[in-house]
Image (tube, rainbow, N blue to C red):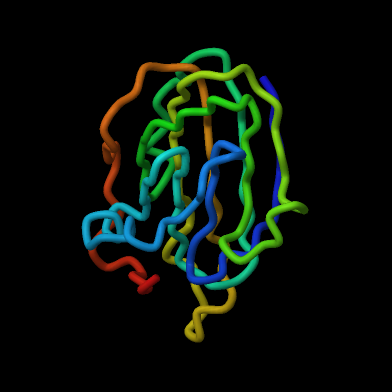
Amino acid sequence: MKSFELSLFADYFQFYIQDEPAAGDLSEAWTEDAFDRLLAIAPGTVGIGTVRNMDVPVAVHLLEREPDDDSADWDHVVEASLDVASGRIVIAGCTDYFPDAMRIETPPGCYRVRVSYGALDTLSEDGLDGDDHYRLQLWPAAAIAVRVLKQRSASGPRNRL
């Protein structure tokens, strides 16, 4: 397993993970459904919604197989597929300078991305501070449609992207 701890600027309440040569354009992907599930997809790109428009902690784990279900420990959990044809994954905030973004070498193929969202209800009144955190787990797997494994509560913060 490879693990990385990052702090990403979640400008516009989002960051993304993508195959390096993908366009990364999520502008049309943030539909009402995508907003509700805090996850948008475009070819070769997965956009992760956040509850703060600030730097957020992100843990990334590359796994050999599907991890155990620990969704009871998280506020919200969503899965999607990511095709990594190039063998290079890029993780960045949506306004980060792309050449400086983190890259992870991995065998080319289709990966499942499980995004777990924690402490979504810890935001300060002004929405600038909080203990929200995000974990991405990736492993080789057949492509799937986006699915919500655990939905956040209706009372949680719902910022517009």
